[in-house]
Length: 147
Image 1 (cartoon, rainbow, N blue to C red):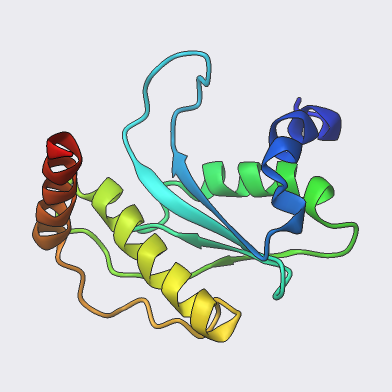
Image 2 (cartoon, one colour; image 1 turned 30 degrees about the vertical axis):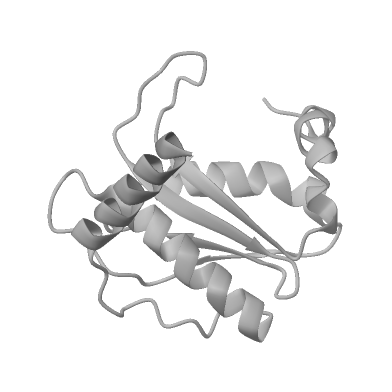
């Protein structure tokens, strides 16, 4: 069982309690002391809305993992109530694009949160192009390697 003081040890240096939005890329690995897992999803904490939002491009594959993480973070982040919402998002059509969907969803939500100060109203059913995002990431890696 994870205790609030153990969570604080990891989160306090990041000053997460002072942030308005916190994005967690979440893996379904249930053995944290070993590499593994097969699916990634996105968990976002919105302080202004007192809510965790879970976005999973493979229906609800990571729902249990998302809820477990959120439930451990709630006592650290707030003394009040925090909601947990599964937010609709585009679904991947294969078994390997989940990480790209996490990046695209995080980028879209961060932009929306910056403009509006909240997450709930962000439309997440707009088209995502995994191949375009992969190309963008590859170009970024090449440009960093060249500099």
